[in-house]
Picture 1 (cartoon, one colour):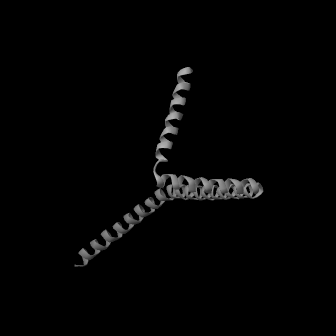
Picture 2: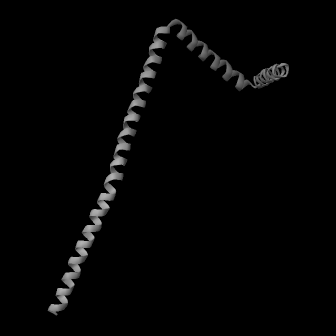
Picture 3: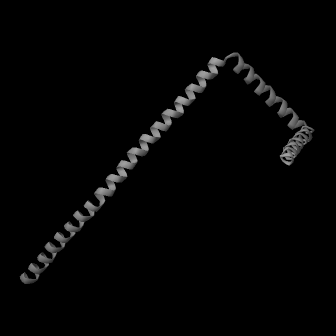
Length: 118
């Protein structure tokens, strides 16, 4: 357990040192400060308007829920159509085969009649 704490401590110290070194670059520092101000402003707004944030989250959840239901319905519809095709395809193949046989018989019969007439 003691080794694990040292590992986590070492990782945190390394991250802090790496972050401090990266802040030596002016562009990184400027971006960090700008992003910090944006996040701070958003947090302040969220604290001042908690009901609005809660309503927005509820709306997003409902939107995702509706989308999931629509996708589920679409998948069920597609599944039923695939099952329909599985059932009708063998029947259609049988009908086509029977039709082919009948046409072949009629063509053979017609050819024989033509030979006798010639």
